[in-house]
Length: 350
Image (cartoon, rainbow, N blue to C red):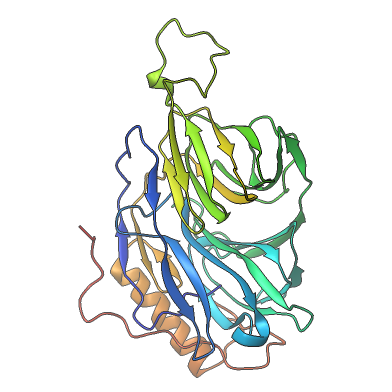
């Protein structure tokens, strides 16, 4: 998915400071994708207070949308550099096309992962058969050593696994205690998973304590019970109840993203009168500075400026299939021109 904002925020992103022993709640902001009938998305990453969770650096949450009203998802060909995109749906069907020749549908329970590497372009359009559209679009920042890799695309299916009362699907990386996840290529230690609970249910979800984690609520509310390992006394039993009175609890509403720093080996999720669906994101804290602007991730203003210049010259002006970004065959329409860069150099935000 493209960032279609007219004035995209420029971010040079230093490693984030630890959030402390409580669940940090990040509220989304609404962003329209397109024109007057635009589909609205709720964006929780990046924010000024938090730019990454592991290498996850962008999270758009959308739907459920009646496509007869919104027009569905129509994102023309646009570029990416230095990242991977992850498409995960709750409802509907989206067709992906890219400049390495991939044409693939994604449906609920399946994942599309595109590695931009040094540069790629792609389009995403909901299919005529789609009446309701809902899902998340996620980006993963590539480490410096692999960010110039050759562009590629992968599609995979996931298998549901029962964990207490929850149904869990791992669509990226691995989750402790889950013996199956989507087989897709990643370049840093990560996890991405969907967790669904019926009303009046609970589940203990084991976490990798070296990861930081985010819980993005698609359906809710959901109560999250957790305890940092540092809270436990030295002589605590190995099987100490993670819901004991020494733990912490917080409630997350639909659309909110709850952040936990490293040092937690699990969370207990509880529902009351309504079911819940959560997207769990996690990874080892990303220790590199990034410059994010529009659909590019780089390491400096000059680099991002060069990416924009190439996109405008090679694709918008010349339709050159052999440049950095290539061209997307089979899309009925023109590619997206890049917005104007800010009049000042891209620089760190306070």
